[in-house]
Image (cartoon, rainbow, N blue to C red; front, side, top):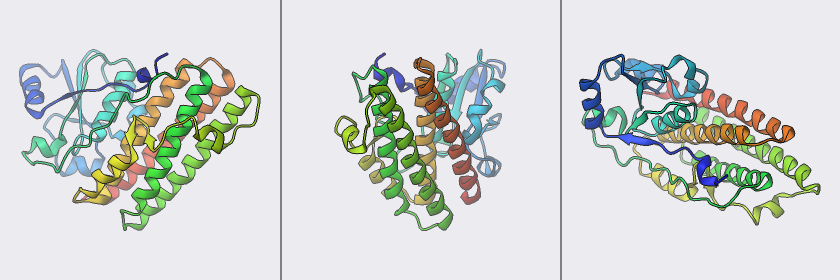
Length: 278
């Protein structure tokens, strides 16, 4: 298995391309999905769009018709990429993310859309290599959440980011334990760090680039929450893939637990974003 195949590639559409599809096809052929939270949706959405928040889309995939062309969108195109990736992973053959989100649809020029640097990691094929990869991605996420916490003043956001930091530490411990069982010797953070990634998060995203992007956003709180949801969804997508690829039952249990926790994280972030949306 090529490690690049673990990260789901997502095709995108511009707002003009999206409008062309919506105007040239019937509602029986196209499903336009708004993956923002209810408060954002109620404030204004694209006519005909169906609300399925990113925070719960993994548990609502069965409600979407796989025979349709599916287009996801959010506020600026961050969350919708992750939503499209999860749908594609689940068997949708024609699914797209609309770049720029509803801001671009309404003619507003955003200060830059976040580009996820996917497919940067090659050559890891064995179970222990995959576990090492997962450990490195969790460490990258921990560093990101620690730095992102310093960018927000909101107490609730700081609390949830602190919780995510603790979860990443716990996830690393789960992975380290599984790796120790497979190698039949005690593995430590120092040992695995030498063969792992440096400041890279789920989806091959650089921590430094993500933080730089956040610093250039007008609303750092919403941007931090959006990007955090994007990362958690990427992690969910990756771990679902790993779970399906692995054969060792004990290792599968580790990833099954991680999948459940990522869903919880998405729900918490979505709830907070819905509360803070203005």
